[in-house]
Length: 194
Image 1: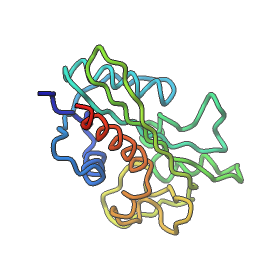
Image 2: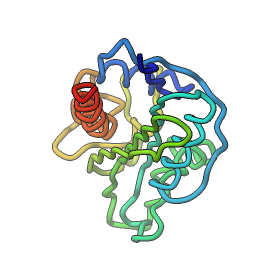
Image 3: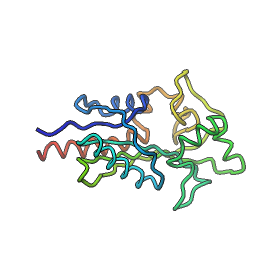
């Protein structure tokens, strides 16, 4: 019998969205202290998946979320990118949009990368989802529980930021949803093979 998959995160908001989107109670959750890796989106996700599989000693899913301001990004450097957590910690939600004050281009994209690794000897497989949008000047949200950069990201085609949206709407258009749809297809095919 194969070991259950463990989604490695200590972020309760990510866990709630993951559970709402995936709807698979067989996937476990564990908070594991992983080294904060620097590099590209794919390098970070790959290394996190390998490290988590070594600690868990079984199949894992890890997740990394990025926010890219198109005005500040170029092919080999996307900002704030995978360092969004530190940008938020340093500048806050009010300060983050100010990085774009001198730019006409307020467009941005959110990127979610899930890494799946069967065990420490396996190569991780990456699944990525992207949502295009723009950055609003002032944070907008509907409740006291603010999740990451949601209050400043307005997805294309919508009037509400992720922070204003009902979670049932966000969870059908977000970067996390788009990545997890790919994960679900992969896991279904994997189950059917066994």
